[in-house]
Length: 136
Ligand SMILES: [Zn+2]
Image (tube, rainbow, N blue to C red):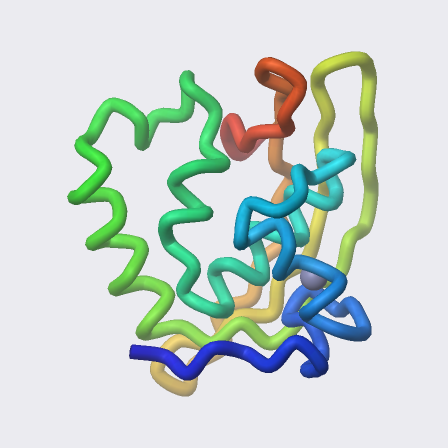
């Protein structure tokens, strides 16, 4: 088990304090107000092993929804355990109505090797809440 991150610690997404950045989203106390906020909270969820949040924030049409929740959670646990998430840089955001794309650069290391990547993700607002759809 991981030690929970202190509220006063820097947020893995780059926010000053985890306690008023991504933590309220991870705990279900707040919804992400924008696609970027959801993107950031998913990155910090990867960093902290908050796998239930990663599952919850997948759009209904996300390909992982075709598998069972327990299998997806097991894979997420493994990948969050073996990787280190060292920083997030948002490069571009485009939001129109209930859909948005976010281009970001994620610094990731796996077994001491750099596995950083740049990606554009598609998000969609489902019943008023932003959800992750797919990689563009
Ligand atoms: Zn954050």
